[in-house]
Length: 129
Image (cartoon, rainbow, N blue to C red; front, side, top):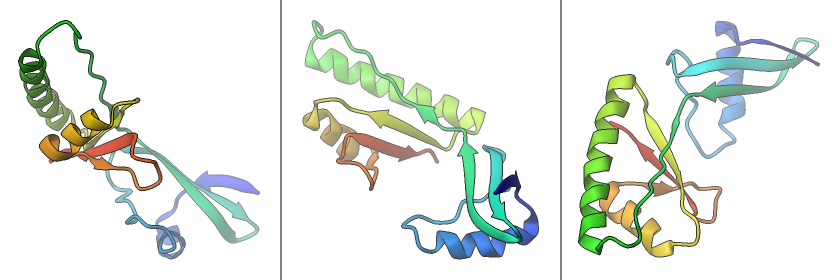
């Protein structure tokens, strides 16, 4: 088994492999995909792997502040971080919420996050537009 860089001629086979998964084939011309390889045995592509730059969103709030102050801080930080992400070409964020279903619900209802399909709901994703 060898690993090599993806060639344009590999794309149809990779799309056929990807059709068995529950997500669209990525746009590998996007510069956020910085590592793109295929595993080959003989002349047969066995699999492929890609690395894409994304952002992990981290939020720290002082538990002693009022709920209103925390909501205002979240709103201001969300807007600022989204603007910076757009400027830098970042297309999505991942958030890991630990032991707080109510906060997950807030992120989903008010900020547009979606649960990752392969997780129990503790990992959320937001596409930046």
